[in-house]
Image 1 (tube, rainbow, N blue to C red):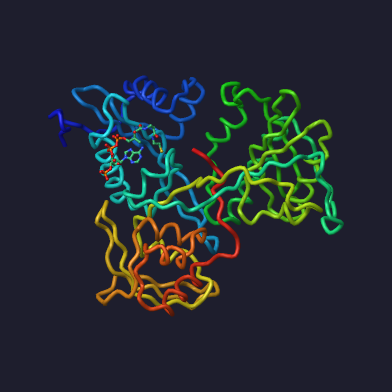
Image 2: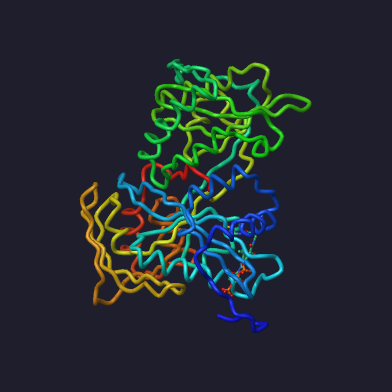
Amino acid sequence: MTTETGSAIEVRTATDDDWPHIVKLDSFSFGTHIVPLKASITRELAPNAHVLVATIGGQVVGVTMHYELQITVPGGALIDLPGISWVSVAATHRRRGILRTMLAEQHRRFTDAGAPMAVLTASEGGIYGRFGYGPITTEFTHKLDRRFAEFRDSAVDPGGVRLLTKEEAEQAVPAIYDRWRRQHAGALGRPAAFWRGVFADPEEGRNGASALFFLLHDDGYVSYRVRTGESMSIEVADFFAVTPGAYIALWRTLCGLDLMQTITVSDAPDALLPYLLKNPRLPQLTGSYDLLWARILDFAGVLRARSYASEIDVVLEITDDFLGQGGVFRLTSEGNGANAKCERADELPRLRISAGDLASVYFGEHRALSLAQAGRIWVPETDLLEQFDRAFATTAAPRGGMFF
Ligand SMILES: CC(C)(COP(=O)(O)OP(=O)(O)OC[C@H]1O[C@@H](n2cnc3c(N)ncnc32)[C@H](O)[C@@H]1OP(=O)(O)O)[C@@H](O)C(=O)NCCC(=O)NCCS
């Protein structure tokens, strides 16, 4: 491909020599100086074969890469998939189609390798829809004034929380996270190199707050930082509980940290916290964030992989402007965890949905009903829309678990 100015864009696999340029490019693009530890962890997560650079006249002007990850889908099946990261184009060469050219090549390679789906965390909400991605999780950030946190009698404290040093946490925490992520649709397995970064906990990653503190329960853990200003406040980094008992015990311990004023935490939309407190208004919603975006590549395979909440029999057309891999498929399932069937079909579709909206509906966070009301799903039969919406609904909100 050539740019508007006539120079050819070459997209190729990275070499060792490209790395200083890649690090410089991403430092400028994300406005943060990438320290050697971060670069070395990234290189472990993404060997050169998984890194693409775009060059113009031999100069590196763009980069994209992927890590090998695993996601849990509704019903508990695990899917290996690429997680895209470090996407950037030099500010000197923007809006000339370099990102589009890189992603076209990257997704061609994913398809050739048989990847069923790809995920990423998006820096901006307006970029990835055109490439067939849809947001699949939402995390709500709450802030509460710990000094006024009173628990209801029904939130009985199961106890069992221990205060851990980082060295102790390193032995215990990854296994608990792994149990948690297998239970939650949307959650990603964290590779060993990712954990190396967590426990290295470099000063540059703390944004002026303390090193990490860890609270451990047999079925959950919390890591947090303390920010000291006029008062001391807690900023939770990880809060993952496998059981409601662990969740309650960890919250009670956090709220027992007497000298702290506020606690800020990001959690699932259906988190239990407000139901535990005498004053459910105490946790104030301060923000929400679409942590993960997904792009389905093997539509039939991915639709077969999840379980459906109720019976479904639909001939749907999936539109895929970016890769042209859409078409008409028949999806059937008896619901209640039964195996689903899905194949390409030579039939008239009764529902049309884009690849990105299908990904959003697939993980249960976004409802087909709402997308149809917004004019994004074409489905003339109300009964079919209701059936589709019911079948894709999930009992728990999906959560990503990992920013990358
Ligand atoms: C985002 C970024 C990679 C785009 O690179 P680029 O080479 O300018 O993008 P392209 O010219 O290939 O644009 C491809 C399409 O995306 C659109 N697009 C690009 N950046 C966009 C943005 N920030 N918001 C909305 N749309 C955007 C373009 O308009 C174009 O649309 P079209 O092809 O449908 O007409 C680049 O601006 C960048 O490095 N930003 C800072 C780092 C960052 O945010 N990276 C993404 C991390 S998830």
